Length: 349
Length: 264
View 1 (cartoon, helix red, strand yellow):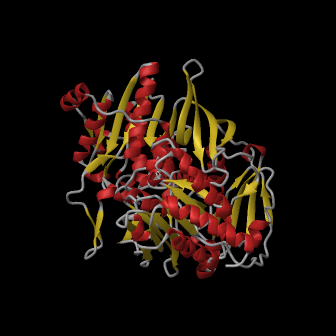
View 2 (cartoon, one colour; view 1 turned 90 degrees about the vertical axis):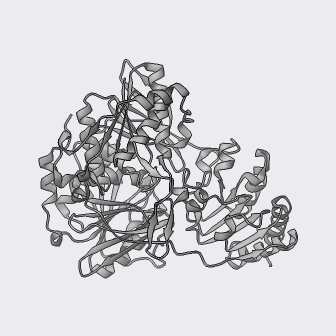
View 3 (cartoon, chains in turn cyan, red; view 1 turned 180 degrees about the vertical axis):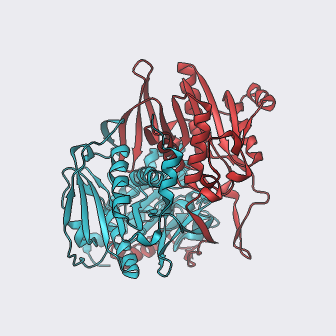
C-alpha cells in the first residue's frame, strides 16, 4: 500500500498563491444527466469570477453525458470533459485521481462542488491529495478581491452558529456548497469557450459498483425538491401519511418526515429532514404536525418560505414559520386539499 | 477481523447556544457526548465482530476529557481504546485531523475495516472519514446504510452507500473505510458489566512523539483552513401566527399564499 508520504505532502504545501487563477466547478452527472446543483454552482461561480476577473471552468467526468454544452450557457467559460468509460458511473478513486491530476497542472484558485453525497465524498479525497483547504456545506460564498481569498460561510454546531472560513496559504481553495442555496443564472451566459475533451489512460478503482437501487417512495427526492410537505408525529398513524402524500401530489412536491415519524417506522429514512437526516432548503416548506425540535429546525430553517400547521400554539416550529396555523391538521389539511383542488379546477383564486 | 472505530467527543449540539454579546459559543454546562453518528459505527463493528470474531479498537483525538467518550464505547463492548491527545494537535481542521488519525491507525498496525460516523455533529463536515481513507490509500464507502455481506474468504464487503435518490450497492476489498448513517443499525445501550469494564479499562494516550507526524502537519499549524468570523445565524423575519382561524379560513390563508407564490 502506498500511503501519501510526508515528503509528498510537504511538496504540495510549497506554493505561491499568486500563480493560481480561475474558478473550477465540479459538474456532477448521474446516469449521464448533469445535476441541477451544478447549474446553481455555476451561477455562484460567475458572480465570484466577476469580482476576481477570472474565467469559470466546468470539470465534467463521464462517458456518455447529455448536453454538456448546457454547462457553457449556465455560466462556464470552458468545459474540461474527462471522458472515459471508467468514469461513466461515479467512483471516488478514479474521479478524485482524474481531478487531482489536473489541479497542479492548471492551477485553479478555487474549486467548488455541490454538497451532495457524491460531492462531499469526492472533494474530501481530492483536498487531501492536493493538500488544499476544504470547507463543507457552505451556504454563503464571497471573495476578498484584494487578497484573492474565498470567504466561505457555513453553519456549524447544529446550525446554532455561522462561521466564515478562509484558506490563506494553500491552493486551491475548495468548498462544497449546499444544494438549493445558490441560484442558477436567469439569462443564458454568452460563453465564448468550448468543450475540451481530455483523455486519461489508467484509472484505478478498487471499489466494484454492482448496481443502483432507487428508493421507490422517493419519486421526488427531498434534497432536490422546490417544495417539501413534511409530516410529523402529529399524524399519529402511518396511514395518515396519505393526506401528506395527497397534498404533496397536488403541489408536485416531495414528502418529508420528522425524526419521530421515521423512528416510528411510518416512512423510510430517506425522507427524514433534520440533523440526523437531510438538510434541505426548498423554496417552500410545509410542516404538518411537526413540533420542530432543534434537530429538525437546523435541517430546514434555511428554506425560503415556511408554513406550519400544528395544534400546539407553543410548538417551536412556529418560531421559524412565515405562516403559522394553530389548528388540528386533520381539519385544516383536508380543507386545504379541497381549496387547492377548487382553485386548480377553476384556475381562479 | 480487526476493526478500528474513530469516534469524537462533541458538545450536545441541542444544548449549544451563542452568547449574543461576544458571538461565541456558550460551552459552559453543555454536556459532552459521543458524536451520535459514531455510535452507529461502533454498533456495526460490534455486530460484525460478534459474527466473524476479532477485535474492536476505538480511537479518538481530543483533549484529555475525551477519554470519557472512549470509556462510554468500551461499556458498549469495544475491546480497547486509545486516546490521541497532545496540545500540538489542538485546533486541527479536517486535513490535519485526518492526517493525525491516519498516523495513529498506522501505528496500531494491521486493520481490516475502519468505521467512522458519517460526520461529527459539531463540525458537520463529513470530510474526516474520506480524509483518513485517502491518507491510508484504502477504498471507502460513505454514508453506508446497510452491510449486506462480509465475505471472509474473498476478503470483501458488500454494502449500500446512500445517495439522495437511493443507494449504490458496492463491493469493497479489505482493508477499507466506511462511514455510517442512522439507518444502518440501532446502537446498543451499555451493559452493567460493560460499565464495570469501562471503569477499570486502561486507556493509553498517544501524543505527538508517539506518532510519525511533523509539527507543521498537525493541529492549527497543519490546518489549511482558518475560521475568521463566528456569528449567530440571522433570525428569520417574524412570521404571522393565526391562532384562532377556522379550518376553512386557515386553508384559504395558506392557499392564498400558494397562489401569490405562483404555485397554484
